[in-house]
Image 1 (cartoon, rainbow, N blue to C red):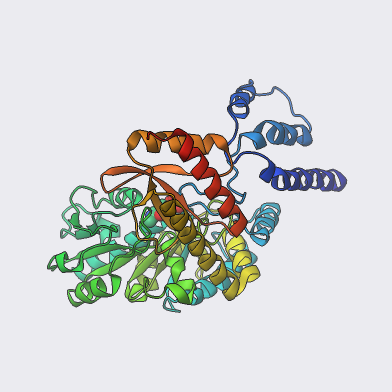
Image 2 (cartoon, rainbow, N blue to C red; image 1 turned 90 degrees about the horizontal axis):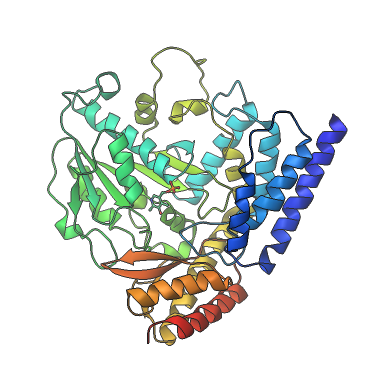
Length: 455
Ligand SMILES: *Cc1c(COP(=O)(O)O)cnc(C)c1O
């Protein structure tokens, strides 16, 4: 048994290493042939067991070619980082451990790694050191978790116990969002019974930022959702001003900083993040800019008690403890030990490594914008972070150029809509991307655009 496990894991390591080493020799997107081959997986459920290495072989031989090369160096779609080597290795180790991270007693190591990672995260993201943290699946769930704490707190202040009684008959909560909030934020709000239609939407400027002077007068239970890093422009809401106004009226301020919160990890982007630390809760992703494997999101809450109250179990099912009990801070009870990779990424890159990752990605975005602009194409956003929104003319041109770039394969970018027009979005979020990759990708983009755009 021991030998065969060792052999299997060795074969797996070899296959995975070959996958990563050869990623650069193929197009970033899978070929149509590779995607068509996926139909080979449509086999009946096997009647009998088979050797695990056969299953692995199928996975690698049919599966690997049909992946998007997200762990490669020239994937610029959505906002999806790769995986730093230490985080990938930690992910394998955590898989071997198979820990249930919900309970300290079930996994002392998972609980410890979360505790240490949380301390480091609050430090590097410049958030209050006593804030609570939740290790969840992504920013959607991180927003959900933080807003559950917000819902608890604003209603508790109004004398209402929302966990016991729900929202039936509760004092109404005013929810304020920017008109350019991320679509998933509205999903989090609707799952919490706060509704995605009944929100107050504050007008935004040409970068998708809340216009502070248009922020409404507020009173009563109120949750304000701000954004650090618009998914198109990378723009930040004026969070300092909003916090001042909202806190004066007793409101809760939340920050959706799925990737933008990481701007706080570099000294050079401090002008964007003013006031972020004044908020009451924050959501971010580790699987985006920290470059850990999927899935990994983080919620931070200034007042730990509001989060614990929001998630309290009705029966004394869990052991009481003076130390941090991981499941008291997440909607889930059982879950994987995703703090392992977060810890590994933070430990292996360190403060300067992370600052360098963020800064390098931002500079690459600037370079893309310069190159495209010099070739006569219009950049639709102020490039303040890692996001570039470019148009190659009209809708038809954008469609053709994006398809052409995806097909050509040097790099991969996707379409977006920005301020009423179609565009292509470039997100640079990987540790692996080099200056040479940027030049190569830029050259490929310009060649495709020259060839296929509508003149
Ligand atoms: C990506 C993103 C989300 C959603 O994050 P997931 O990790 O995909 O759940 C929410 N808000 C913003 C600003 C984002 O960029």
